[in-house]
Image (tube, rainbow, N blue to C red; front, side, top):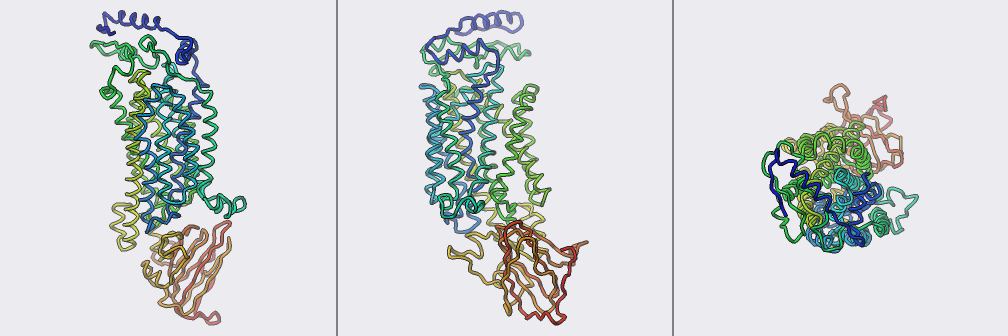
Length: 634
């Protein structure tokens, strides 16, 4: 039924109609949905127990989505499907997109099933799907197995949409913002903790050789451990879901039950400045209304999809950018470094959502918070190319702050849109409505990693092809960092030590000539041939060089540990030398022309630095053709 009236003189009539409607609520003893409604009616406190269960289940759904990002670059590299290092991001995008593409195909179906058979069966089935297919993904031995398991995981894990409906149904109206905040907080933390787990636990035989042997299961499958941890957690969530109360009404008289989470009259009464006619619609069964014609629902879904496309592309590109070599505009982070940044972001996000977001939302409203977040995102992301110019402690602080702020903004926007979507429909439509939202969002998220990975791969390829010759052109698009400028001043070029790279042509090992490698890399002033050649090891804290040869040019190939390389350069103001850091996962080729001092210092606490030195003259230590102990500060 519907009633029309005017705000103002007939306001009391409308209010009386509302109160009368609430008195007509009818509960059925054997209906689990009615039990939840009765609990909401008789208990005015926040449903802490139910919201805790929601938090745990959503965390379970979020962890497998992003746990692969820190190690995806290395997984694709180990599959040996990429012919060039710059192509790794291209293939990584397809692995990242497979999950979302699968979820896009089935989310509406899972929503309809949740509306017909209940939220609980869909949630439990999704938890078990994570246990099975996330484990298989960790055991992937080739590119197509990885894509297939991610696709099946996305297709069969349809729990997130029903969980959003569930969170709004267990809360009284005054606590619905809290319920959606719990959803988005758990989701955001899962998207941060997931990469942290992947970053710290991937390749355990390399990171923790005292605990994990290379011949063990985790040595043969270097990306299995983080997937296994998440699968074990999901198994625990599956058991917890057995005690999850159902919220869907099991009787047929849907029009006689007041759904507290949907009330267009109350929404209208909250807008005190409206003087136009008010239309009061009694809740109906889902089959009587077309969701696609519900503009409040569809508009919030469209905005939600745009932000999720952006956020998913950012999530993948951030990790790939962080682990990419500095010569390609990255940070040369290890997977553990990326995990540390995302762990800090997760903790900060938890504090913000629990302590500050409810206050902000109550004062500004969900729409205003979303608008402010969208505006702030633009300058924040524009600053990332400049972050790559930083080093040391400054880089650590700025990267962590930027990552935290980005996650806070994203979760704040998402929470507001969740509220708008679930308030726009009745309970009988909520599963299908969230299914539409999930399908549309998943399509956007599927496009995000693929497009983002392809874009990053293209940029990296152009960076590698242009090298120092195209540095001015590249800086116009990419804001080339001073790290690359320092490499130029130090007469050095660095690249990844793993396949594929200029020194790793195939799986048999390194094959290169130091002189030709320097020439092909654009390093000038080194040895023209190898009259004398030597191989050396520099232990942690030790140094080699710190001298100046007048009778020979020298070319170096350096690898193995975090190493400081210093080269005399009178064009560097104040210091008179250029100094760069070579990371443990990098190989550097450098040249020291005759009459130029150089030094290598191992600053790694554990690993040894190795180098090959090639000289085009014979150094006689007895004669005065060399200066030693040039720099007193080393």
